[in-house]
Image 1: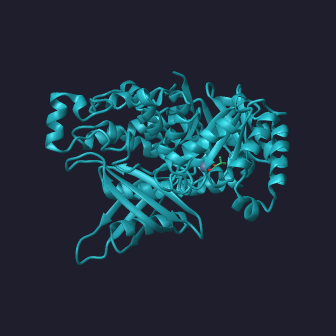
Image 2: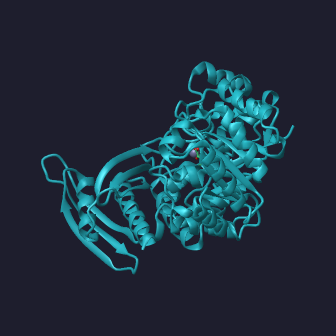
Image 3: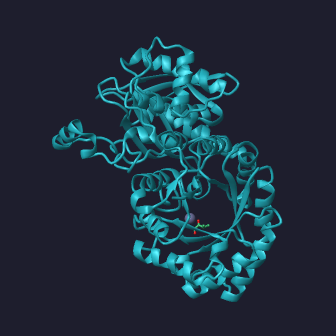
Length: 507
Ligand code: KIV
Ligand code: ZN
């Protein structure tokens, strides 16, 4: 039983969706974790789109070993050159070229005829082959394309040197039986199909991305493109963890597996939520908080008698430890560092020092420190790129019948402390006004969410905010603490730091 090639596009299709942008260090950290997960291919970005994307693909190509590193390009010279140059340091590199093949895209988006598109595809593939022999060709909007034209262009692409042919369901339109039949049609109607790997790339607009990908495997596809937590354009892409666990749990039916180290799945999912500040919904398959929780008495009883009555896989298989409480206030720096590594965080010395400080404060405030608490608190440390500003001190006065007032001290990068006071509609509003006064940057709070990480009254609360700093500049911030006002202040400052780092990167 052969393995399906797992092509991860978290850093390209995933990262390009609103709210999921990552800075270069975050992308590198994510890429290292994808290598630890043992994905076969990492699509690291779309190098022509910005200097930042080029630099990230180039850095990942330099530093990450194991998977093939891939960069996306349209069928135009500047894109292919950018991808070729960015990928140069990679030991194993792939250029992924794409062009639309559906009538609607060719006519209205590209304003090209099918013969022109065919010629562009052949020329683009030939150009890309100057940089690598590992070429992936995608027919964008394949599921709304004329199958006869698909057969023709795929045949020509393979003849021009494509080694993987990708059949994207770009708009998430397909349903499983139909998509499976499309793949079967390609297998029987493309004469040289044996010279290439058939890949699938499904979007989740109808919630069918994973089902479609598996139907494709049943009909001859041997590469699945997917993302961690299913992030991606609009409703997202097929989720890597769901695809991989389906291949593992239902190998009897699907007849194929994957070379993924499934015990790294949970860590990878958590790292992504820590970096982006966007949690997965509790009922998300495989990695959601409730994925292994049995609430009903009948189920609990069954699981206690025999686990398999209601569990088709174990939490351990995805790297969830059953023993969630491990370190306490007497744990040393070494044990803490080891725990962080076990949870999937690769922190540099400065991050580890700060994380350890945060842990000590947390352990003083909270009886029991759980893995989830650490993930929230430390994830918040990672989500503070550059630390332009940090919260040193805050005090709030609030109550019914008085105007909420806050005094905040922030420390800047050089260590200078600045203090301001302000009023607000509530204590958090007052804190945010005081922060705006210190930094001179006015933020508009678009979204504010608080959730408790673990149970009990001393639980860690996680605050996630979405802030607009000037027209169209929307960033997210996230922070966790046993004190919700503190978490709120730090989440706001983390959004501010992210915005300042992004602006700095664009200069
Ligand atoms: O969804 C899509 O069609 C894509 C292609 C670039 C593969 O992301
Ligand atoms: Zn896509």
